[in-house]
Image (cartoon, rainbow, N blue to C red; front, side):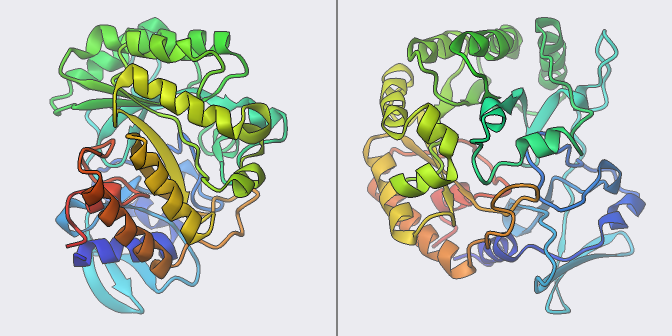
Amino acid sequence: MRESLKTKISLISNGMQYEYDMFAQCKQKYYENTYGYCITNKDVKREHKIPQVLYLKDDLVVSVLQREGSPWSLQFEGDDLQLYYQGEFYQTVGLPEPLPFFGKTLSDGTRTEDLISAYGAKTPGFFFFPDCYYFSEEKACAFCSLREARTTVARPLKNNFTTQRMIETTNYIMNSGWDIPTITNTCGTPRTDELTRRMIIEPLKAIDSVKGEKTKMHLLVHPPKDFKILEEFKEAGVTSIALNLEVYDRARFAEICPGKDQLYGYDLWWDALEYAKQVFGEYQVYCGLIWGVEPLESSKEGMEEILSRKIGLATNIFHADPGTPMASHPQPTEEHIWELAEWEDKLYRKYPDARTIYNISMRNTIDWEIHNGYMN
């Protein structure tokens, strides 16, 4: 395993210690976290200017998880951001560069950074319908901090993605000077399929009208009751889709994701994945699982079940978000992550047609690193 990947695993597992206001004094411009879909740090505020990610060696990025008691710590030495392990200097880390499609003003006065969500260090996208009706039913997934984020630190972000706003923001993205291989879109959960059509499909069509043929469009969404909507997603320009089960073990799924279990259904979720595969093709449909919320063996079984069905695997490593029922749940140990990483490495060799959603490192997953040989 490359040293850079070992470092990333340890930082995700343990987090790091740092002072929130240390970044507010930084003279360098960088991409700050806008908290579009979660809060990872307790009592954080926008004015703290926490970066979305940090760069490690080998172009790896990692989430900036603040955790008391971690052996890792972070501080500036002049203009250099230094990472320490148990008080000893470990390496200099980098800040993500500013996003060239932020800081623009639309014709209605909206700022682009209040509409565009960026994933990792540079992948642009949007968060359509940034809420989930499971919260209102008191059946939200136990790890999800979406509503907490949107009612606190992410309150300035916009919720209305009109056609005109989508056309203007997508034009800014495509004319930014950056290579944009993918625009990725995450969605909350509307109560009805008709609301899905209005709040998700319509803005997707607007993006597709501008983005050009070479740029792919990924969609992470709750599966609809009417599977025909999956075909409508493709007609709207979506090239790959993720329907994240999150938890493979049926009993743990019911416990951690009560809304998905009671108001949609475990078996129906698998039916939706199979239907989506017919629409988008083999390994163009992804199913996400979270490492650290169920036993190792069920995680392993679930990972192989997904890939054996010719569905793409998308994993995320659990982080305990404040304001959620799982806020005190321990993050997985380094050993837990290592074992699953070794298993995923074997699976990628067993199922060589499988790919990762993104072609770059992302902050709370190591799928790309494993797929690209960082284990060897």
